[in-house]
Length: 261
Picture (tube, rainbow, N blue to C red):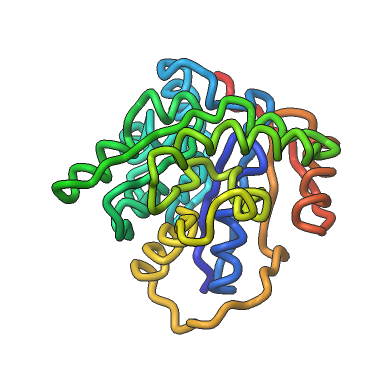
């Protein structure tokens, strides 16, 4: 029997979580929700993000989920309590998951404006052990650029230089990709970050936590299979379909939904 899992993001960022999941197990059905009508979330006020979280949990409420994977760091940082309280099912989140695998004392976090302002990463990590220092960097334009069609990688490279410079000046030893969109540009970031600095993708410990909770015998990576994934979007479904093809190299039906009440 397959696990029925929900994944949501403001757009394509959740692809990083979904790929980590589907590369680790094949006994799942996934409902992927992209609230692309209101993308990006990272520049919104916390009050609006919490309202959106209520609408998202209401939409997922009748989907018979076994668990929810919160693929949006901004919602994770500002409204985790709403998602968990409303759905009453296991909710696996990025920030709690990644805070448990930190191995250094000086940590950098690349994140959206709303995530940085919430200080969720800083509090979650620094509270685990004395002496850890977290340096946060708001990356206000990354998500919008990653979501563009076609992707302007020259612009992304220029932004990477701007956003990474303050963290590198602090001599951080690990950098967390604190937005699920950012692993999609991992190759760009890896070229800009010295190899001695560990880059952490929070989707990996999130999926590991899920796999420990819902035990699986599979240990080796497999090729992600999207046959059991349903895609839903709140905005332009033709554009989102192009992004699915562009980033995942598949063609899938995209169903239009409304979250507004």
